[in-house]
Amino acid sequence: MTKHILTFLFASSCLLGQAQVFSDRDDLQKQDSATLAKPKPYPYLLPILGKKATAAGFDLPYSAGIGINYLWQKSDINISNLSVGFNHNPQHSLDNIIQFNSATVTSNGINIRPDVWVLPFLNVYGIFAKTYSTTAIDANLRIPTDPSIPGSEWKTIANFQTKAQFEGTTTGFGFTPTMGVKGFWMAFDMNFTWTDIPQLEKPAFTYIFGPRLGKAFKLNQPERSVAFWVGGFRVKMNSTTAGSLPIGDLFNTDGINQKIDNGYTQIQEAQQNVDDWWSSLSPADQQKPSNIAKKDAAENALSTAESTLDGLSDAVNNVEHSSVQYSLSKRPADMWNFLVGSQYQFNKHWMLRAECGFLASRTQVIAGLQYRFGL
Image (cartoon, rainbow, N blue to C red; front, top):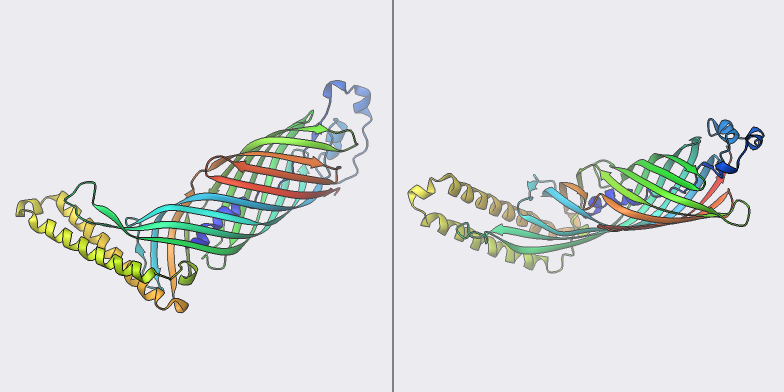
């Protein structure tokens, strides 16, 4: 399960491969009609309208480029609607008896991003990434104990911690509308990716939106500049995941049988408490819908917990041949976080870039090198 939960966050982390180049019209107030009337001829096919933009005084970047980026990310996700089965037996909904204390994704990897300026204000690009990730999940198995005591109906009978490593392959595309005047620029990066992990039933889809606002400063040497920007990073992903993986990839089985045995003991004690409470009610109270609902909820939860321990016990005692099947819903703990970044342009061919995202529950760092050329 942990291997696939993090896929979606990994996909989002590998989408930050955009170098901040843009069409810029510099020193508008210093340009006169004579300057604009004699522009240098634009020698490339792209972007469309490139010749007109150059004639209007815009300094265009080279129309095509390829970048390579290293990324690191750590983020939290929220999990709900969990169903689990073992060794391809029927799955049981655990949403009412599992409490997730934390689910943290840490990833790093490399992405390659080819791009082309289709229009002077529109960049289109592809994404190809390989990511290596780790997910750590801490969860409690809880059961009802005594419906007659308000506020103490549920308690933790076992804590499970999982940590899994895996690799995923991401492909996708994106586009960036942008504009620049006198070194100031705005960009609205949007991309769509699909991350494939063998154990997932289907690739994970992620949508990223990243608005940025920045300023470029020319340096003394020709074509050399440095840029700084701030912005935001928003992640949206498909919310349902289903898959299967070996039980050994989820648990360190040392000591887990003791947890299972302790869980059985506490389930039996809780069932006795529920039976004693029900027997203590008068016939009239046993007919009350509220008491019937409490009894049914408690017994259903205890039955689900016992079935889960049965399946887990069988799986860990034959760990080499056992697997867990699951489905769940997930979402980022925070959809938005804040970005700051900088780019050093050696010339119009070579750029070096770094960006950091922080605040909220997601932190990411990216560093990359881009080469541009005319097309």
